[in-house]
Image (cartoon, rainbow, N blue to C red; front, side, top):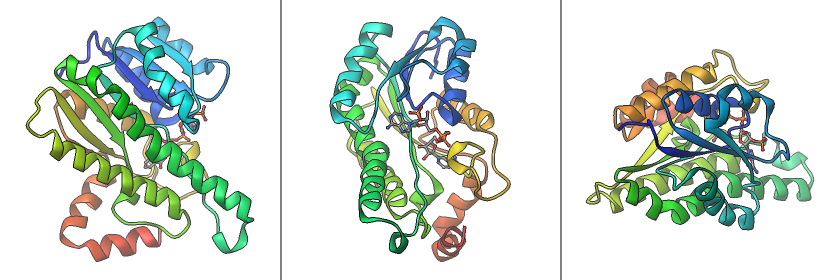
Length: 247
Ligand SMILES: NC(=O)c1ccc[n+]([C@@H]2O[C@H](COP(=O)([O-])OP(=O)(O)OC[C@H]3O[C@@H](n4cnc5c(N)ncnc54)[C@H](OP(=O)(O)O)[C@@H]3O)[C@@H](O)[C@H]2O)c1
């Protein structure tokens, strides 16, 4: 598919993978709406010029999520690509944190990482289909394949998003007007992965790979080490479970 002239909504474009995606998509001639929670547009977006527009939206607030599609249509036109990229992850030990904190973190992870993508897909599906072809890209994780102990609700949210993506793809298999795509990054050098692991992939490289996958009409865009681990999960799921459990 071509990206030139399309309107793309990228959730969570204030930094990390989303910010790099916004730049890559704008460089391909797309108009890009990005969202985040801060009142002011992040200064890094200024480098991309007027084709990237910042819309403040807290994805943990369902009323703000419901209002977002109309704002994108008004500012940049009907979107033909939705990239559900925004995500949060809280690593903590459930036995050693306060009940209120645990509950708040669990609710935020499930709402931002799973509920908001499903809501936005529901609200924008007709826009995407009218674009023929329209595309929804859900950014999951290797932790959608097998969980790690330190972030149970994050892993559940990503496994849920992967399941949602596959079921919707199967449901729409006979409809060529919309594609349902999963992008699976490895560990990436962003704020989310600060203090965790080594050999992290550069977010700019991740963004380029996602855009290349979109241009090549891939339905599952596995990135970097996710290619190998994703393949291994098919033939040796126990090995992948052990790997991610200890990661
Ligand atoms: N980093 C990794 O190793 C890794 C690996 C696999 C998958 N992923 C996935 O890749 C995606 C991007 O992650 P990243 O590494 O780029 O993370 P990041 O650098 O922490 O960026 C997260 C983005 O999500 C936005 N966001 C968070 N909560 C939000 C909310 N309530 N409302 C609106 N926007 C919100 C943030 O914006 P504000 O804070 O400005 O609101 C920010 O733009 C996520 O879905 C993540 O799960 C990341």
